[in-house]
Each structure stands twice: as C-alpha cells, then as structure tokens.
Length: 411
Image 1 (cartoon, one colour):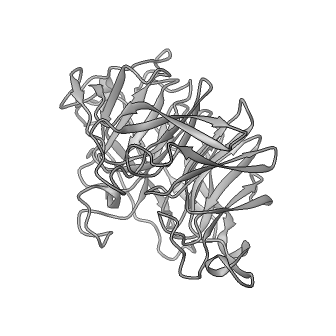
Image 2 (cartoon, one colour; image 1 turned 30 degrees about the vertical axis):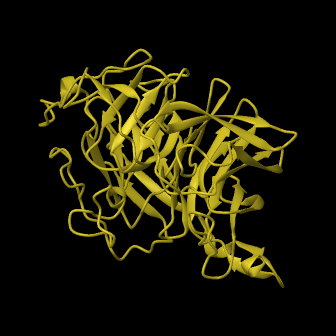
C-alpha cells in the first residue's frame, strides 16, 4: 500500500505464483489521477490549486486518468545473460561477470540505453567481486544488445539529447563524480571544473533543455559541510580539448519557489533541498508544467519545476518519495522500466492516456526511512501516477512482481 495515499484508489493483490521472468499483466483500476474539479465526484478532496511556470493548453484533468484497460509487462532484458570483463581491483588478469543492478534508462535514436551498476559503490568503491566498472548498454526496443561500454565508477544518472545525438552518464552520485558522454558510438570521459564541486557531493541525472546540459547536484555535504546556497542543479559546459565539464549553478538548494499545492499553494517558500536526484524535461503534452525542467528532490518529497532560466520556480509536495518519472505522450507507446531487484528491463504496453505522469514510488528513500527497509510504514517500491495539481500519488497494481527503478516512455 502507499500509506496515506488517496482513499479512492482500488487495489488488488498480485498472484504470487506468477514467475518474475514470465509474461506479466498489469491492470489499471479506477480513475487513478483526477483533476481538482473531478475530485469530489471521485470521492477524494483537493489539497490546493496549481500555479505553473509554463503550460500548454490544459486537458480536462490536471494529470490524465490511467486507462482502465489492462497493461502487459514483459521482460525484455535479463542481466544474468549479459557479461563484461574487468580487472579485479584494477590490476592483474581479466575476470568476467554478469551485469547487475540496472538503474537509469534513456531512449535515443530508436534505441534504449541502460546503466548497469555492477555492485560499484556510490563513491566508486570496489564491488565485492573486485570490479570497479559500471556498464552502459545500448539495446534495441526488443532487448537485443547493440553495443556496450564499461565506465569506471557507479552509473547513477543518465540523460539523452536528441538535438545533438548524445547520451550522458554520470558516475558516483555521492562524491568523486565525473561525466561520460557517448556520441556516434564513441565514449568521452569529462572531469568537472571546479574539481571540488561547491555542494560537496556528487552528480546524478542529466537533462537537456534549450541547449543547456542540466545535471542534478546530488548528496550535498558528503565530503564536507555544504552551504544552504549550494547549487541544487548545475548547468554544464563541455570543453572538448581538456575534456572538462565546467559546472555553473543553475538554481540553489535554498532557492525561492512558489508552492503549487497545500499547505503552501500560491505562497513563496524557501527551499531547503537535501536530496536532488532524478530529473527530466516535461513533455509538451503535459497538462501542467509543459516544457519545464523538473528536479526530483527525493528524500524531501518535493518536485521542483523551472523554466530554462532557472528562475520562477514552483514546488509540488508529494506524500511519498519517488524516483524516475515518465509521461505518457501517446495512447499506444511503451513504458520501459528497469527493475534492479529482479535484474531486468521490462516493457509495459497497452492503452495509455497521454498526459499521465507515471513514477516509481520509493518509500524507503524517505529521509525518515529506517536503515533496514522495507519496514512497517515503508513498503517496497511500486508503480504509481502523480496528480500535478494536488501532488497525490495513485497506485498502479501489477499481477506479478515489479519493483520499478528507472523508466522512460517511448511513443
């Protein structure tokens, strides 16, 4: 269950006999996301009105209802069937191991790119097998391998820029971070300048907005006390000659934002971000925040929306932490999801309602979560949707186990 989520959501249990690697079906139940004007009819109450920094012509709902039709979940990649070679502790004879821990996923040029973390630590620490490398794999939509690259460190954040044909991957989200760029099949490693990033942490998700490369400033304070005014997001400029990535502040952890929903709807608030994490550019078909950059401050349970200037921010409070979010941009597309616990990449297909924001709900990433999690009040990760007016999360029930992590929607 999703704890204090809207009581209008109907749920059913999955059949435990279904094999995790078999074909799985997901059933959408009821109106999972409704506009403020429809909340009373759905048996829910609104928690506030929306104020946005940019929007397209709104649809009848603030975030469209998920389809009542069935969705099918199919495994297309199993990490244990893929391998890479590495030098244990960076020296000696090469060893081979299976790929593991698929995390972030992006789409570019008709293919998918998935980062496998392979047990590497959040500051690049060696895995139990002695491996120091994550692996980025390019797949066809059916899950066939096109190409793969090893990268020193733990891949945690990724992004893609269709305008330039580049895929970005950051490593080591807590500290000692750097950036890899794949262009035309060639990989280039960039180090940040300044080398000691001012938020004293690492870097995570990457998004391309109006020619800017925006990278979230994750884990502030890992390597020393971070100022409240430290960057929450960097605007990065790549310098090809020295292979450096110049990181300039985009907006700060303590920036001023306008509240979207209760208790601060319409009010100016001072942010106090502690966990900048995943990000994306909101598609043009979204009923709210279309074209904006969205930063997910995961442990703080806040989504921050910004235009290309890094000004005029809006903050949406949500009742549970979330990880990756993906908007349905067509009725018949595919939602690709990584499942780290099962070591798989899955394709979710069916009838989608364009404008719906799907998300990986991650209670164990709350700042208040216990060290041993899942735990009472902190259930395992699940698939949900976000109401962009109220911040309410509604659950999506799947028949058969699915623990979503990264996700991307391909129309």
